[in-house]
Structure formats: C-alpha cells, structure tokens
Length: 61
Image (cartoon, rainbow, N blue to C red; front, side, top):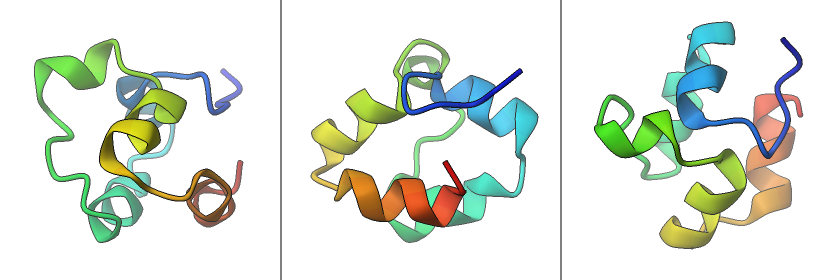
C-alpha cells in the first residue's frame, strides 16, 4: 500500500512501524488510540499544529 498524507495514522504505522518515533518527536503521542484508526496524517498535523511539509519530509512522503 502506498502511504500518502491522506492515509490514516494506523495505516502509516502498519506499513512503516519506524514512523512512530518520528510522529512522537513531533508531539503526537497517542498513536495507539482509537482516533489513529480513522484520522489521516493530514488531519493529525492540523489538529496538532505541526508543519505538514516538515513532517512529510521526515516520513519520506
């Protein structure tokens, strides 16, 4: 599965488990919560006030 900014956090972590450390470094600590199953990466950065381009680059997206 190709991961994009419109993939869910859960999909990202299934495909790239190492991404958890990157997300946590940006202050996204609730990676296993129910919201992660339906929230996209794009939605999460808006909620957390994270620069989209910076996170995307760190995740290799």
